[in-house]
Image 1: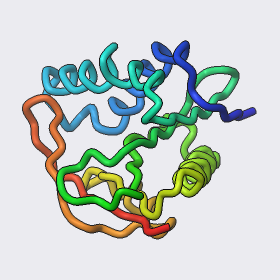
Image 2: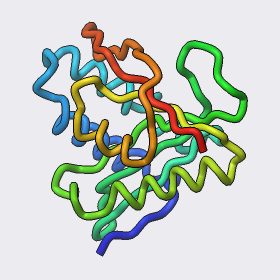
Image 3: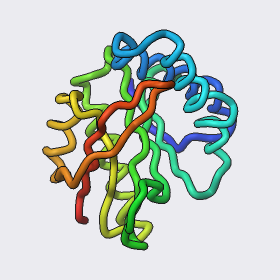
Image 4: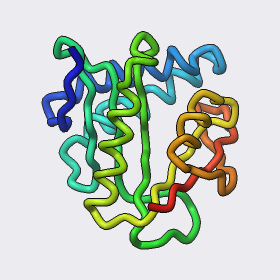
Length: 169
């Protein structure tokens, strides 16, 4: 049975471990080991994702199976360069372990993310997605997200292209 709840500070280590695993499952073959390790340490180390669990600017929703984190979505203020509406919100990370794809986890997390955005007065949701992550592109497009440009995404010393996407609520 899959359950959903808001993340708590005590979830830091298992959430970081799940995020590392998910990112590596999805993108691990694209990068040199040193670049992958640098990215994982920066994004999911003590000063990354776990530290945001106690930051009131961020909201993180977990999907759990037998109390093990199998997915999460993180929302917060827009940090992409450029001019953004003051009522915009960013969808930072949206990860579901591959063994749980097709089980409705992503849809449930997206429903929460959009409700969170609306309930906090957001009029648009901004995200970035790797240009060659076609599965993610199709998923976001089903919800009405549209490409609005490109942005550089750094993984260690490797710089990839991400598409910026926006959903007007």
